[in-house]
Image 1 (cartoon, rainbow, N blue to C red):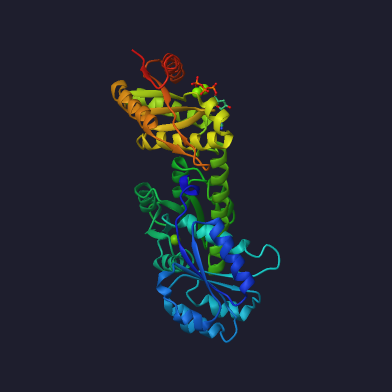
Image 2 (tube, rainbow, N blue to C red; image 1 turned 45 degrees about the vertical axis):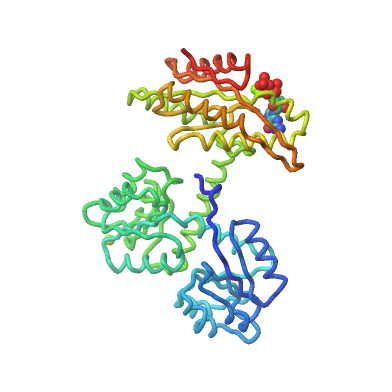
Length: 422
Ligand code: GH3
Ligand code: MG
Ligand code: MG
Ligand code: MG
């Protein structure tokens, strides 16, 4: 779910003779992603360039003194993932190009001219550092799928399995798997069983399953979809159709992830919001009881924050909130959770952390904030402090939070202070 915050840098080369179009495409790509894009306008410029530095090429097919033969002879040999853009798609050209090692072939349209390219880049980026699992008992079928995926998703790792049992094993061992292509008829565990078992572990927005089968038996496709496949494709299929189905499913997941981000996170600080905190904190509380692990709650409140707003303005107030949020986030471990509890209040759950150790962490946070000088856009140097209440006592999460809140109230009597429940 963190992918939206973590864009991966890529270096892109745009080959395009239309100067206006290419300039706008470069701007749109660099604005949308954390990518760097360079442009070349001619074959001569291109051949002078160190092409190996690019991760991806987006190229027009027809340019002055440069045609599709050139693509075959020069661009393909570079072995860099290549997206072709053209205003004139025709069947012969498409068939010719489909034999070549090209990621995708995008049609330039009048309206929304970059949306197809941006969409494609978003999909490729999403699948970067993720894996695709292919499950099929037929070696030939695996090879066909492998070829399409290698070509169309060049930044994604591919895993294979020969039946549902092995597929399930691979799925458990590799948390990076995001998409699964599974055959239906297989020995040991067939596609239907595999999907059923997978859905007991993962929702359809966690792992995308596309079922593939040549079986003509009635209701197989609808049964596979009903048991939990996200999509179904009848074999044999054309390569481009498989790619389109994968793209569509990934596009849906990207949207769902964006909605989740909006629902779970505070937009100013990027931390979880209060509602989501309660969701996961409740689960962690129950786990801590079961595993007999200690758990501490820290209630943190910035001191005299209203004064910062009144003195330097609301914008500077926002800036301080973000900076403090970062300090807090960087002070905790991976298994801990932090959320924005209210205006200038933050809540932290320290998992498997006895009160004594929680006290050390809170003191460290308090000192860090006390010693830091924040500098805003108008070069004002601002100092701030924070008060923290800690508790591990209570029969429910709510009781612990209430107790931590009481301790915060105590701390607020002097401010810049940590008070722990005794
Ligand atoms: P104390 O030391 O007692 O905690 O005093 P305080 O001024 O920090 O606390 P108080 O509750 O009186 O004021 C909190 C202020 O935080 C008031 C509110 O306008 C401000 N605030 C809340 N949310 C935001 C925000 O998102 N951005 C900014 N800039 N200010 C915010
Ligand atoms: Mg089979
Ligand atoms: Mg407050
Ligand atoms: Mg305050």
